[in-house]
Structures are given as C-alpha cells and as structure tokens.
Image (cartoon, rainbow, N blue to C red; front, side):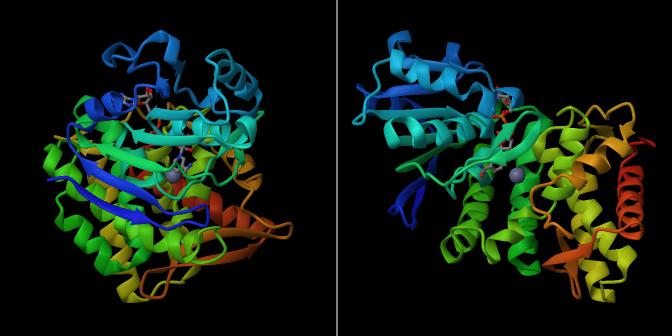
Amino acid sequence: MPESFEVSASAGSYLVAVGQGLLKKVIADNPDALFMVDDYLASTLPIPETRRILVNAAESNKSLERMPEIVLKLRELGANRGSHLVVIGGGVIQDIATFSASIYMRGIRWTYMPTTLLSMADSCIGGKSSINVLGYKNLVGNFYPPKEVLIDADFVATLDAEKVVGGLFEAAKICYARSYQDFQAYLSEGPAAKMSAEKVQGIIVRALRTKKWFIEIDEFDQKERLLLNFGHTFGHAIEAGTDFGVSHGIAVGVGMMIAVEYARKRGWLSASGIERTSGLTSHVKAMLKVDGSSIVTAPEAIDLKLVMEKFNNDKKHLSNVYRMICPCGDGELEVVSEPKNEEVRRDIASAYESALGEIGWTCSS
Ligand SMILES: NC(=O)c1ccc[n+]([C@@H]2O[C@H](COP(=O)([O-])OP(=O)(O)OC[C@H]3O[C@@H](n4cnc5c(N)ncnc54)[C@H](O)[C@@H]3O)[C@@H](O)[C@H]2O)c1
Ligand SMILES: [Zn+2]
C-alpha cells in the first residue's frame, strides 16, 4: 500500500508519496514536463530525447564548475519560467537539480523521484542542495525543495549491496539522532543489504517521518537539524581524502564510528552511553559484511595526513574551534566544539585510525 504525508517548508508544503510502480505514473502524468535523468537509468526510461537532459552521476559533475552546462541544456530544451522539471536519479542528480532548478530563471517548479536508497530514505526531503567547488565537497548550496517527492521502492532492486547499505547508514543516522528508541525501532524493521520492496518501503517511511520532525522544527539548520550531520564531518574527509573512492553513505557509516570513538577517547560517554553507541557501531560493522565478505572494496591505504587536511578544511568548523556531532552522556548527540590545537588533532587522527582499524582498513601516515 502506498503511504503519503506532507512536509511543511517556508516555500510551501510538499507531498511525499512512497510506494511501488510509481515511475510509469510520473511519466504518463507529465506529458509536457522536461526530465533530468541519471544517464545510467536512461535506457530503461521511455522519455523522448527532446524532453530530457541526461546527467552522469559522478561526484565531479556535482560542482559549481559544471553548472553552466546544465543551465545551457535547460535553455536548449526550451525551458522557461513556467516549465516543470521532473528529476529521476540519486543524491548527485538531486543536488544538481535542486541547484539548477533554483537558479534557472530565478527558479522553476520541479518534482523529484529518487532512485537510490540514500536519496529515498534521506536526502529527498529537506530541500537542500550541496555543490562541490574545485575539489571541496559541498562547499556551496541553497534550499529549494521540489513541489512533490514520489518514491518508487522498486528502484532498489537494481542497487548493489554497497548502495543499499549506504542508504541504510543515512536512515540509521536519522533515527539515532532522534533518540535511542527511534534507533531501536529502525533496527526492528530488519535493515539488510538484501530486502523485499515492502521492507524497504517500511524503512524509507520510518526514516523520512523521523527526518520530517528535524526539518520542520529547524528548516534552516540552526539547531536540531545540525544533528543530522552526525558522521558527516568525519565521513566527508574520508570521501575527499580518497578522491571519492569511498561513497558518501559508506563514509557516513564509518564517520559515525569515528565520532563514537572520539567521544570515548574524550570520556564523554556514561556506561549506558558506551552500551548504546556500541549498538550503533555493531550495526555499522555488521552491515559492511554480507556472508562474511566485505561489501566495500577497501581503499588500499587511507592517507591519514590528507584525510586530516580535508577534516581541517571542513566548512562546518568555526575559525577557532572544530565543530563535530558526537554522542555524549547516555549516547544522545550534541554539537561539540573543540579547540584547534595539536592535542585535539592528534586525538582525532587516532580516532580515525582506531575506527578504521576495526573495519580492517589501514592508514598510511
Ligand atoms: N542534498 C542533500 O540533502 C544530500 C543529503 C545526503 C547526500 N547528498 C549527496 O548525495 C550524493 C550521494 O547520493 P547517492 O548515493 O544517491 O549517489 P548517486 O546519485 O551518485 O548514485 C550512486 C550511483 O548509483 C547509480 N544509480 C542511481 N540509481 C540507481 C538504481 N536504481 N539502480 C542502480 N544504480 C543506480 C548512479 O548512476 C550512481 O552511479 C552525495 O553527493 C551526497 O553529498 C545530498
Ligand atoms: Zn549524507
């Protein structure tokens, strides 16, 4: 059974529908729309060339440097202020679409159909775009939610285990950030690298309804929503420090382990905090393996110096303190500020080394 709910935003509320078999309907219902589509999916979608823009979902294309091409393609297809853009693809396509739809003729209407579990269970709501600039991850962006989000759980069938697990890590992050009970409820949905479409739908709905709380109470990332960056500051540095060889969702899962490790080193966790965060790190470790084999090709060796350099340059830090989301006390997340000094950098690097060691990834320094 399809499920739907509304998300309120300052630009107006938008509908989120989650079900199966929605793709055919979105194409049939929008005979005049223009489509922006992940080129990987193009051959499976009956959309005429005259109405579609194909975009390769490479992290390098999600950049300010590539925006003029996208804007020009919209112009070539005849897009005007009244045009409706239907976007079909994962998080990279979503970021490109959010940004380009927001600036094209000062903003055109768009509908989003996410096709990776990460985009279905997390990024499709909230309205954010994050665009890389000259190798710096997600350095610029804005808020421009679609008018409608239509989620077809059937897309998950063609995702490999790494992409499914990357999406699950974002879903786990949202639920853990809300409360330990929400994280337990997420685990009770039975997240796994291989799942039926019904199970996937349950996880998507749980994650999105939980995320809805954060984005409605704090649309513009001032307080509560900041907690959804859990795993990201540590994870982005791994993505960027491996030239995006580690995918976003996997880096977020590993980043949550590093945040937990850092909090333990600092002595911020009570006995119950240690137990609760262990529940999370055990889940991440378990998901990284299927039948005893790793689902991710581990980078040969992580260049810790480069990763630390990327960590240092993260836009979330302030001029004199590192800002991170870490578990404290009984495991609840907090925004913590640490002075930018040698001791802190040494402990952060050591948290990277310990957590990466736990999943069998080695570091060179
Ligand atoms: N704006 C936000 O709020 C937000 C939130 C989280 C993540 N993100 C961004 O999203 C990106 C990661 O998203 P993603 O993991 O969805 O990446 P993605 O869009 O790059 O997709 C990953 C790969 O899966 C392929 N793919 C897409 N749909 C498929 C399908 N149904 N079957 C098989 N393959 C398919 C793509 O072609 C691509 O090769 C990162 O750049 C991250 O920064 C943005
Ligand atoms: Zn993310």
